Image: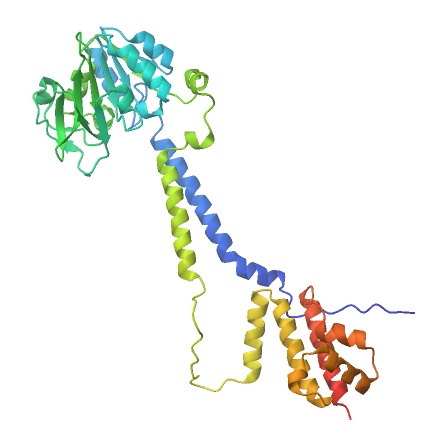
Length: 398
């Protein structure tokens, strides 16, 4: 009857407690990062709800300016599709485009064609490089360079001169139109630009920042005066809030992919994270070059050195290297015991016959023990070490 021997668990096999101890720091950091991301997303979504919406009373909404315009006889109508915005363009209408950069290239071309000869006023709020060249040909957008958003008019536009200082600092514009009114300059570039239409009474106004339209900024400086004059020059105001769900975007340019819907800031941020990770990897990578010997200030016991090296092998899961080191050391010690030069200790054709003659054993089993494949797990590695130790003890036995 054969009895199956169950190998006891060894200290080389990590326990569940050890695994948790090693991973809990990383798990806690990931949990905190996820919680912070959720909290930031919730706070930002609450704070920016209804941004630039004339129906919203939130701090970033624009209900206050709509109410003031209504007191002056200007009716405000909100539209969310390009078809409604194009149909509303007329001489007695001011068309405000809240986020022009959300429009596709085809939508921008269609909107400009409808407003260019309408005779009305078109107000583009924070139109960046993604849209300004299509909606206002001859105009180039530059990013803001100053944190101070309160600027002085410094132009002859009557509306700006009456309003005085206002919070227009944001995107800056340069133009090739000689008749354009360039107001509220920031480092010599205008943050409010009015371009008269080539024919008729219409014009296009570009606002570098939406601050003068926001509920919590309307009562500061000349914001209210400037907003009412720019939006109240005609009896009707159509407030266009572009939407990614607009059918015209899908029908004209096809379905937009996931990366098309992400703001450009997220893409640049992700790229910066990858660069930072690569730099961190290079910083923490193994340095190249020769090893420099250094005298230790104190004597270290051989057992401590062996234990430290074993822990390094265990941490790297280098069972193959550990097994090779154990077998090499055993062969080096066995060779003199069986009358083989140490230089021939690692040659199977020389060492194995001498061992077989000494032990009267099976040469195949000795070959597997001393020159075999690496163990598959930690328990097999410990078993290999025990068998090598037993073999050496048997050879040394008189």
